[in-house]
Length: 315
Ligand SMILES: [Zn+2]
Image (cartoon, rainbow, N blue to C red; front, top):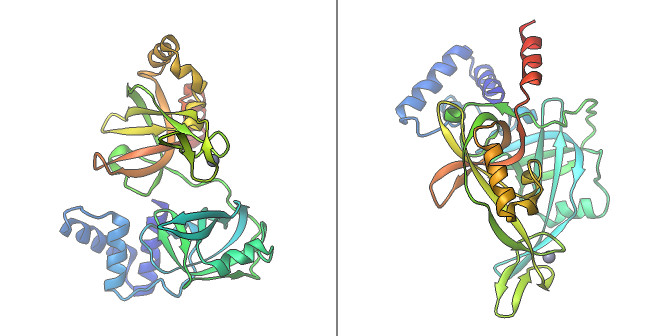
């Protein structure tokens, strides 16, 4: 709840109220809306009611929250991904993703505007530069820049950046769409893996047509198969479906072994009832209209390591 606490502090400062009073109003608002919105969402409504605006404030990356519309931040670029071209509804466009970091956290930034993208393509802004972003919008955890956003090099010096994503360990009853979470739970169910065809060159989904398979980028291809695996994770109070793709499956078992019935059964036996840590993003499953966790990382709970951590905490 690091973001939430920072937000409450800002609302308190901006309104002259005590932080406890701001929190009380947030709780009341949330109750009034029958718990339909998150605490963060309720806090943003209270901020608006109190006339506290974040529009002209520079925020730290740890203060960003889903739903914010005018985000101003400064951060150092720690990774830039290649420019991607895409075609949507017959229109061609480009997009660039990169990560910025400050002392508090890091965040993915997505550029959609050709003028912004040109700064990257022409090498005017590169990895290691500190950049200033104004009027960005949050889509879940990402900062998206449109033609109305500002994107430029900054003179601010940022010495120490936080490159580890700050993921909060949560209980399943608390999780909400858009969050990055870490959950400790027991695997109580494992579904049979499903396989889908991908382009052998770029790894993106290949779609069948009359003569074989087509990759949007590479044309006709002989597809490879990739697996998707679903578990149900239970933390004693609630349960959630988790989704693992290739990279995460291979943290547990070589992906191709899932096609071998004996190896699959042995894997199922070994994973069922196992306690695991899962880090990932909470997404809405449109089909079932519930939330699930798309896993970035999964590891079996190492009990000895856990005791070590707990002992350090209690000192
Ligand atoms: Zn391809």
